[in-house]
Image (cartoon, rainbow, N blue to C red):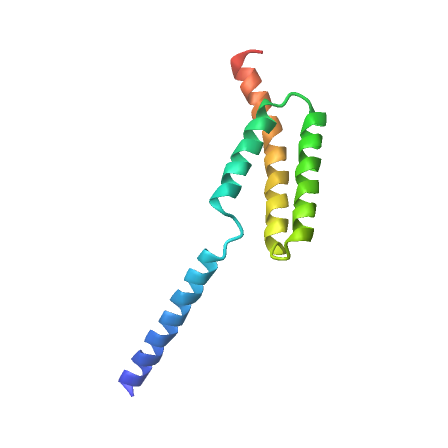
Length: 105
């Protein structure tokens, strides 16, 4: 009876490990996404006016919508990417202000 319980626990642990590995492999972000996020953040920080930032965001959004229509694989990944771009654009303005403050511009 004891061996049966330990065997069931081992099988259960193996299934959970496989499930966790699948979740890690199926993350919506790739390394290229992180490069784009970094470039977007740098451009947003360097950017001086909110109008340019809005133009960049709208261009990214339009490109994402066009790409989503072409590819059906971007259901949740599309939402995650737009959320990250929105957060980066919100964070970029205070970072820009802090850089200007410490540089003395």
